[in-house]
Length: 101
Image 1 (cartoon, rainbow, N blue to C red):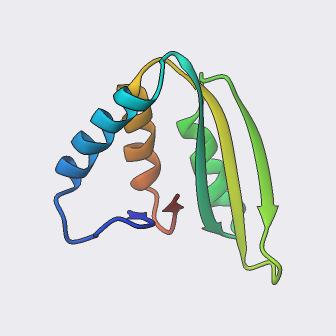
Image 2: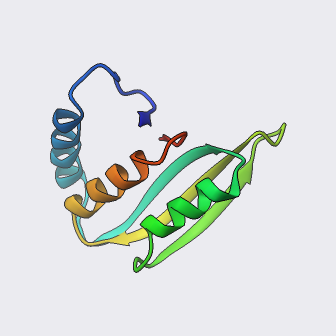
Protein backbone atom coordinates (compact mmCIF):
# COMPACT_ATOMS: atom_id res chain seq x y z
CA UNK A 1 0.00 0.00 0.00
CA UNK A 2 1.28 3.44 -0.83
CA UNK A 3 -0.54 6.51 0.39
CA UNK A 4 1.08 9.61 -1.01
CA UNK A 5 2.38 11.79 1.79
CA UNK A 6 2.21 9.03 4.38
CA UNK A 7 5.30 7.95 6.28
CA UNK A 8 5.36 4.30 5.19
CA UNK A 9 7.36 3.25 8.28
CA UNK A 10 4.52 4.25 10.62
CA UNK A 11 1.88 1.89 11.98
CA UNK A 12 -0.93 1.54 9.39
CA UNK A 13 -3.59 1.06 12.08
CA UNK A 14 -2.50 4.28 13.82
CA UNK A 15 -2.65 6.05 10.46
CA UNK A 16 -6.20 4.82 9.80
CA UNK A 17 -7.34 5.74 13.33
CA UNK A 18 -5.98 9.26 12.82
CA UNK A 19 -7.62 9.45 9.39
CA UNK A 20 -10.95 8.36 10.88
CA UNK A 21 -10.80 11.13 13.48
CA UNK A 22 -10.01 13.72 10.81
CA UNK A 23 -12.80 12.47 8.55
CA UNK A 24 -15.34 12.67 11.37
CA UNK A 25 -14.23 16.22 12.19
CA UNK A 26 -14.33 17.53 8.63
CA UNK A 27 -17.20 15.67 6.95
CA UNK A 28 -20.94 15.39 7.51
CA UNK A 29 -21.67 11.77 6.68
CA UNK A 30 -23.50 10.37 4.84
CA UNK A 31 -22.18 12.21 1.79
CA UNK A 32 -20.26 11.93 -1.46
CA UNK A 33 -16.54 11.33 -0.90
CA UNK A 34 -13.83 11.59 -3.55
CA UNK A 35 -11.32 8.73 -3.72
CA UNK A 36 -8.30 9.17 -6.01
CA UNK A 37 -5.94 6.43 -7.12
CA UNK A 38 -3.04 6.12 -9.54
CA UNK A 39 -2.28 2.78 -11.14
CA UNK A 40 -0.13 1.53 -13.96
CA UNK A 41 -2.18 1.52 -17.14
CA UNK A 42 -3.46 -1.99 -16.49
CA UNK A 43 -7.14 -2.80 -16.97
CA UNK A 44 -7.03 -5.72 -14.52
CA UNK A 45 -5.92 -3.39 -11.69
CA UNK A 46 -8.77 -1.02 -12.48
CA UNK A 47 -11.19 -3.96 -12.50
CA UNK A 48 -9.97 -4.95 -9.02
CA UNK A 49 -10.72 -1.43 -7.79
CA UNK A 50 -14.18 -1.56 -9.41
CA UNK A 51 -14.91 -4.67 -7.33
CA UNK A 52 -14.21 -2.74 -4.11
CA UNK A 53 -16.94 -0.28 -5.12
CA UNK A 54 -19.54 -2.98 -5.93
CA UNK A 55 -22.83 -2.06 -4.28
CA UNK A 56 -21.80 1.57 -3.75
CA UNK A 57 -23.26 4.41 -5.78
CA UNK A 58 -20.37 6.22 -7.51
CA UNK A 59 -19.28 8.15 -10.57
CA UNK A 60 -15.91 7.45 -12.15
CA UNK A 61 -13.44 9.63 -13.98
CA UNK A 62 -10.29 8.16 -15.56
CA UNK A 63 -7.39 9.99 -17.09
CA UNK A 64 -4.26 8.50 -18.65
CA UNK A 65 -0.88 10.10 -18.07
CA UNK A 66 0.81 11.95 -20.91
CA UNK A 67 2.98 8.96 -21.83
CA UNK A 68 0.15 6.46 -21.24
CA UNK A 69 2.02 4.53 -18.56
CA UNK A 70 -0.34 5.45 -15.69
CA UNK A 71 -4.05 5.97 -15.16
CA UNK A 72 -5.56 8.29 -12.58
CA UNK A 73 -8.94 7.04 -11.37
CA UNK A 74 -11.29 9.23 -9.33
CA UNK A 75 -14.33 7.65 -7.68
CA UNK A 76 -16.92 10.05 -6.29
CA UNK A 77 -18.79 7.62 -4.03
CA UNK A 78 -21.73 8.01 -1.66
CA UNK A 79 -20.49 6.73 1.72
CA UNK A 80 -22.37 6.38 4.98
CA UNK A 81 -19.59 7.10 7.48
CA UNK A 82 -15.85 7.33 8.13
CA UNK A 83 -15.69 3.58 8.76
CA UNK A 84 -16.84 2.92 5.21
CA UNK A 85 -14.18 5.30 3.84
CA UNK A 86 -11.49 3.47 5.85
CA UNK A 87 -12.79 0.07 4.70
CA UNK A 88 -12.56 1.15 1.05
CA UNK A 89 -9.03 2.52 1.49
CA UNK A 90 -7.91 -0.72 3.18
CA UNK A 91 -9.42 -2.89 0.45
CA UNK A 92 -7.92 -0.82 -2.37
CA UNK A 93 -4.64 -0.67 -0.43
CA UNK A 94 -4.41 -4.45 -0.59
CA UNK A 95 -4.23 -4.27 -4.40
CA UNK A 96 -0.58 -4.31 -5.46
CA UNK A 97 0.67 -1.30 -7.39
CA UNK A 98 -2.08 1.16 -6.42
CA UNK A 99 -1.11 4.60 -5.12
CA UNK A 100 -3.79 6.34 -3.08
CA UNK A 101 -4.00 10.12 -2.97
